[in-house]
Length: 364
Image (cartoon, rainbow, N blue to C red; front, side, top):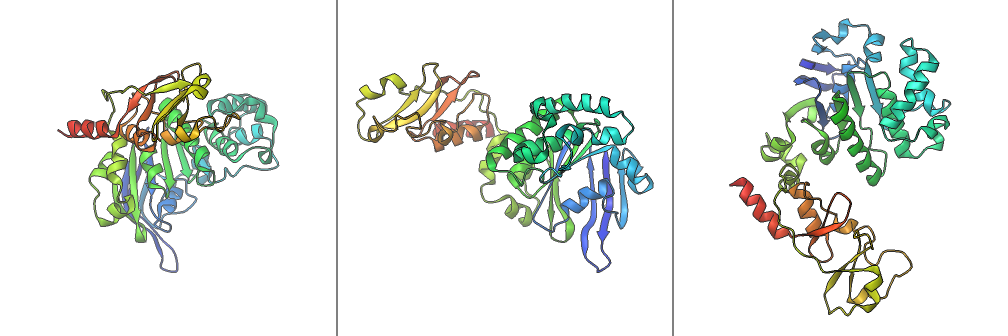
């Protein structure tokens, strides 16, 4: 348990970075600190491992006031992941990951052996172990940073905007990785971000910080969206908070409709009418592209006819949320989202109108 009790950070020039912060992060909880720049979210997180010392109040970890614990000992028991990974460029990946276990007295040989297992756990090929950070992609570097933080199996993990320096696709992959790891490891995590979508996606609890380092609301994501505490929180979340809230509503029982489709081999024989769309599937039944009358016979060089991954149509799985179902329907060229089974094969389509009906039924 991490507990902030009226914790304040005030600098000598009078600047108040954090103002009387009171909140608890229970064991096994992923708490996200979110807010605009300069609101105190990062300062609050860094006080947990005493990288910044609190001015007033009590900050405790497992009942122990952090200011009364040896700072080095405290930090060795807390994993820390920062933006752009912060890896030591002169050390190989395996030695970066083994850093904390070695500092805690473990033999380098034993630490390196364990590091290989941690690399696999975060989705990295152990063959990368002997490379240097500069030889990795940004996403790979960030995974190494997570592996290094997990190497000593700390109960607490601090993550300071770890994914803000990578592209959106890699960021989404890393977010999914964190959720997967947390489901397995159940660490107590404090994650700092300025992105409300990331906060809502990852957090068990979300703390919204405002100007002057004041806590505006600390709640579960679903409640944050449906019951913002004040105008600041409402404005920070944005006008589309209702759409975001759909991710917390299940799509179980959503009807699936037939989708007109052809295989790649049948494309040349198509005779589509104006405005008519057809789903192109591969021989294994997986969706490949949408095509209409203007696209017949075009782009046959192995690239997309219209959307080779159906990314624009955001594939939908029956166990997804209503948000994913609505996104699939609205993003699709044909106005119907593509539903696939666990093997990626087409099983039907979803309509936006059905999502609205399901939403009304769940509210009722």
